[in-house]
Length: 257
Ligand code: CO8
Image (cartoon, rainbow, N blue to C red; front, side):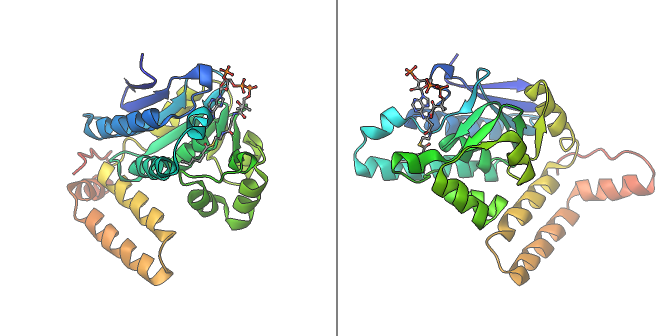
């Protein structure tokens, strides 16, 4: 098994970070492999969601590989940050939504990977944190940008500037995760994905895109984006099928077109 393991469970692709002896820490090579796996997911026939999990009971991902970071020249660090950012940003443009299954520690780059996913589910023992400040660093894979968008500037600054841990129950309370799950997290992830996988992928993509762009746009422009994307959705065969099925009192059969 490689460190980045891509498998399939029903209509979900499952990416497992498989380096439990280092709590699934991310070397630059592993980040590149994650990027290659995302490209593969984009090409997988019939896949309707991507689930990301860490191997082992203890950790989703303990962040960037600190031992590797220490010995890098400055230019490499910049390239490293850009690499991590561009690979994680790829999740926004995948044809399918992604769900981080945070089973234990999600620190630094691990939290940032979870933040870049469309959704986050946490096990009861999940612990989030951006502890870079304790290393004399700051987050480099999107944490300073995505965390405030998700939970607001005040809370995000406090978490980033104190480097403190956020346990699962608090993460749920502040909106950092969609839900905390008792029991089998993978099973819960498959059930969670099942709530949207039956819908039209283009419509799901337009919805993601409209909401994600809201954070960067003034309201008037965002409303224009919404009008454009909802019109594009309206023109799909799936919208025709969805509305016809409503009138005919039957279940729609979406074809992703
Ligand atoms: N990098 C490399 N190795 C790690 C990492 C990591 N991030 N985290 C854990 N490991 C290794 C440990 O060194 C240890 O290996 P060994 O057995 O060979 O000594 C093994 O995993 C198990 O870890 P611990 O013994 O420490 O396990 P504990 O249960 O005692 O502690 C913790 C678990 C609390 C998670 C602890 O391991 C820890 O604090 N890890 C570091 C967490 C952290 O600070 N992460 C942020 C890293 S920085 C980052 O992600 C972004 C930087 C900005 C990037 C900019 C790009 C240039």
